[in-house]
Amino acid sequence: MKFLRYIVIGIVFGITLAKAEVVSWYRIYEMFKFESFHMYGIIGSAVVIGIVAIQIIKRFKIKSIDGQPIHIHPKQFSIPRYLIGGIVFGLGWAMTGACPGPMFILLGNGVGVILVVIGAAVLGTYTYGRLRNKLPH
Amino acid sequence: MNEVIAFISQPWPWYVAGPIISLVMISLILFGNSFGISANLRTMCSIVGAGKNCEFFDFNWKSQIWNLVFALGLVIGGVIAHLYLTPSTEVNLSAQTIEDLKALGIEQPGTHLVPMDVFSWQSLFTVRGFIILVVGGFLIGFGTRYAGGCTSGHAISGLSDLQLPSLIAVIGFFIGGLLVTYLVLPFLYTL
Image (cartoon, rainbow over the protein chains, first blue to last red):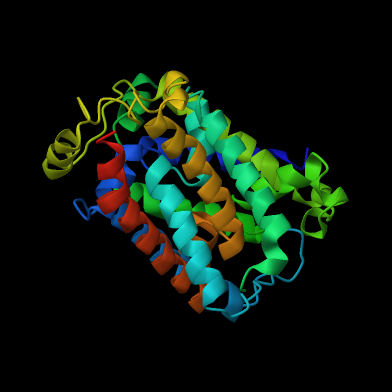
């Protein structure tokens, strides 16, 4: 079953964010108040290791496990798109204390009402899709 | 075995979680995919037929099933952590944060992962609960697609690839987050 590897990786990620309390609303509040190193340590160490790993993948032209070349697509440059979109996302992140990954993990943690947050997020994505041509990118 | 479970049932420090997150990202890249969870929200729109009247959702969502399976893994991971690996629901917040939350009007902050008075079905019928859960969720879904990624896609994957757009997005995340934390939440907690 080819999807097995994705479910395993998802479980590892889910347990990790739950056990490191990244899924906690309180931890996000604490991060935006700059009152603990915890979240910065997590994101910072993930990025530092990620930078090294991606440089290795690129320099040594490492192939995927299926033997395909790995393409990491550069993002098209724009300021309004990333800044406005980012601010809107940040507003929601600090309110709900959950970005998309933790939403699913909180569901597993028994926070049933998070389904409403996920539903609202799907609606937000749909609304963006409908308005996309009218927004600055 | 019980000792192993007791050991991993402690809260995980940042220097354990951060490297595991990198490994998750690297694994997905080596599988020929990319690490970005919010793409699932777009896929969900597509599955329920949003592609019929909007070209943004008119794509082959079956190519994204792997990411939905990954999201299902997140739910299962949450269940496992909740049932077997979390003897105490207490969150290890800094003393200053606990003070701030009490000043905000939250009783017993950090005794659960989320403030239970807001994250309940009844709270949806209050102004505060509705704004935090429904408006907040909507803004996440709208903003993440507008910015082309969420924390996993920009803050982790994009910054790891030294992408300037991702740095701009992360700066945006913080502008929005600080506005809510310093202005909106204190207002909502006066309601």
